Amino acid sequence: MQFIKHLWFITLICAIASTKATSFSFLHAYILPRNFMDLPKEDRALLRDLILLNHPPEDWRQGNPQRPNPDPTYDVVIIGAGMAGLTAGAALFKEGIFHIKLFDQSPQGLEGPWKTYARMRTLRSVKDIMGPALGIPHLTFHAWFEALFGAEAWKQLGKIPNDLWMDYLKWYRHAMQLPIENHCTLVSLIPMQECFELEFQQLGQPLLVKARKVVLATGRAGFGGPVIPNFVKHLPKSVYAHTTENIDFEALKNRRIGIIGVGASSFDAAAVALETGVKSVDLIMRRNHLPNVNKFSSLPYKGFNYGYCQLSDEKRWQFMLAAFDAAIPPPMEALKRVEGNSNLRILSNTSISQISYEDSQISIETNRGLYSYDFLILGTGFHIDGYQQPELQHVIDHIALWKDRLPYEIIKTHPKMGDFPYLGPSFEFLPKKPGTAPYLKNLYCYNYGATLSHGLLSSDIPAISIGATRLAQGIAADFFVQESDWFLQCLKEYQEKDFEQEDYLFIIE
Image (cartoon, rainbow, N blue to C red; front, top):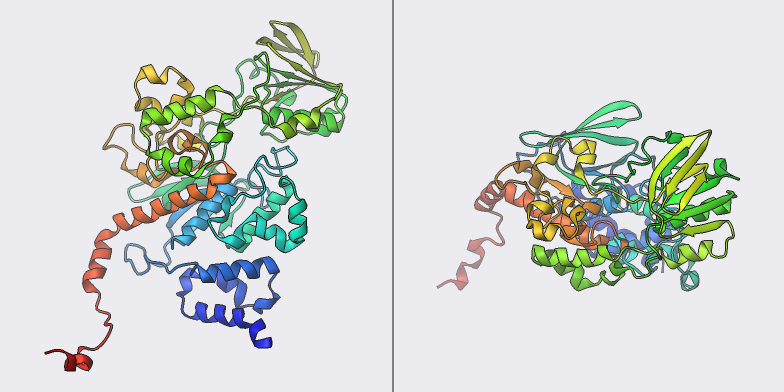
């Protein structure tokens, strides 16, 4: 029994002994310092999966003279270490690409929205999703949760609480040993002859990094940022905030709150405000009723995830037009959370003509009359406009958009959709004019901006592994193509014998 107990430890050590040092850094971090059986249960199960999958593979580009070791230029830099960035990094490891680095502007443990501006209590998705696990069974939230809390607790779990999801992602980062630098805000991205030069601000200090390829895993706001309506911009910043910002709800106790917009984030903000003790909340919407059909909910099936990007441009446009035009309703959980609260009003058929600020009071003129508030919250969504991203200033003029690829007669059906970037098959940007800006093939849009080109693979939990795999496999293929001369030379020079001919001369007539 003692032998069996340590069998997997022995197997892992043997596997490590036969693996090149550059491709098992995280196994090395786990195994060598301590006994395998001392690892947490969730880590032991995952390591077994990884060994069975021969993960990580060998560094198949090792020895290329174009990549001196150590090379100060990263093969891939990922901007963003939230769910999409983590999954992309792990997918690159899975494809044998290890010289990577992730950079995130947030402190460790606060990457992504889950503990900041995602104010819902639970995820919108069902608990059974694979999420970022990349097909590795014990990398799933399900396996992690059961290892910590047991199978019975899993049966009792409804939807996944936000805090618990963030705890899982922190474990994911640790389990896959992803190299992440926090407190790093990307300031500029400049294409050079052979790479990109990236400038970050890290805790007030400049940080310069070079990378052959750059992945923008920058989330929902990653290709345009939050929408701040013009009728708000003249107000003092102290009296309004977008739902993506940090809002001090404690400071808003006993105050009147106006919320513009009725999407999920607006209802979540309203719920937190009411639970904190504000005097009143008005949700202001132009429609005469709340939308109650989320067309996007019908899309996360395998055929769509795999085949959408292979449709014609016109057919992809029709799919997304049908989904966007229907509007996205707030989820039932968000409505239930504020149901029956006497301090909440939803003002329908209300269009805003002007907003003024005087004597510490915000006055909103509408078609239904004048409304007064102490603070405004903007649930106004996000731009799709790469010109709003400062780090893209050196490249945005050359990036193809959907309005550059489709006739105006089609674009005019939904002009804002025309501002989505028109991406290649692996999420790479394409040039506005064919044959120009060749560096764009090394710059990848793995954020919400990819929606019109690739569907829901870069922002939604259910299909994030499919998207990350497509991204990583595309990057691996492109490295092979770029370095194919060296690989061809390796093939020609390959002389490793399977056997000695003289040992088998007796069977040759």
